[in-house]
Amino acid sequence: MRLVIMGPPGAGKGTQAPWIKEKYSCCHLGTGDMLRAQVAQKTDLGRQAKKIMDQGGLVSDDIMVNMIKMELDNNKECRNGFILDGFPRTVAQAEKLDDMLGNKSQPLKHAVELQINDDLLVARITGRLIHPASGRSYHKVFNPPKKEMTDDVSGEPLIQRSDDNEDALKKRLATYHDQTAPVTDYYRKTGVWTGIDASQEPGAVWKSLLGVFEKGA
Ligand code: AP5
Ligand code: ZN
Image 1 (spheres, rainbow, N blue to C red):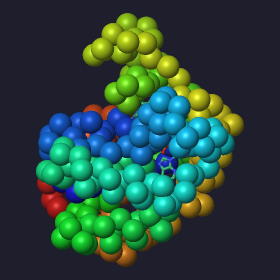
Image 2: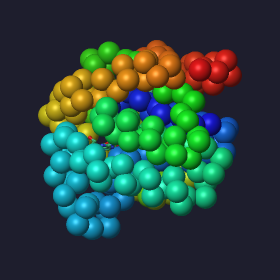
Image 3: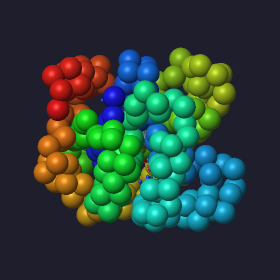
């Protein structure tokens, strides 16, 4: 599996990616999760990134490209393939990724866009709860944990992301339409793009994804 999973905030990238990882035994590189780990560790990058993330902006292309390159080169879980979730987010990132994969003779197989109308995303984002250590996400209504505010697997507390409020979401959506939507056109041109309906319930989205992977790009 060599996959980019795209879609606006709340489309379901982080919900579907662990299922894909399990089925195809590849790594799941979520750039938002990686940045939140830097914030939690209070690194310099984490401090800079938190401000940008809370305002719904984008961290610089160079930082993000290097972060992904490090993982693809060194993370043993990625030997069998990868799922990129939240990257690339600009056409410049997509071009750099193609260069990187071209050098390894491991071109991208699929760029799947989770397509969904903006008005469905407010409820998904404002109801989300996450387990910071694993990146697992739940929803107060659509996917509640077994025990209130507690991760099903570790028993640790769940939290809300600091960018999961209506104001930050508006800015994240504007950034998505402005800077990330052109990446879908880029992948249409390179022939790896498929769009699927992400407004369906999670199990139906999963079946649509499997349909894409099984028929090939
Ligand atoms: P990131 O963490 O990538 O955030 P995002 O793109 O805004 O996406 P989300 O994580 O909000 O959405 P998701 O699609 O994963 O939704 P989920 O599955 O959790 O990035 C955060 C920030 O980091 C960016 O804003 C930027 O500042 C920075 N950044 C990251 N990458 C970068 C890059 N490459 N370049 C520059 N900056 C970068 O689902 C959402 C909720 O809905 C959950 O509660 C879930 O349970 C529920 N749900 C999921 N699917 C369904 C369904 N089918 N039906 C009903 N509910 C559902
Ligand atoms: Zn996510």
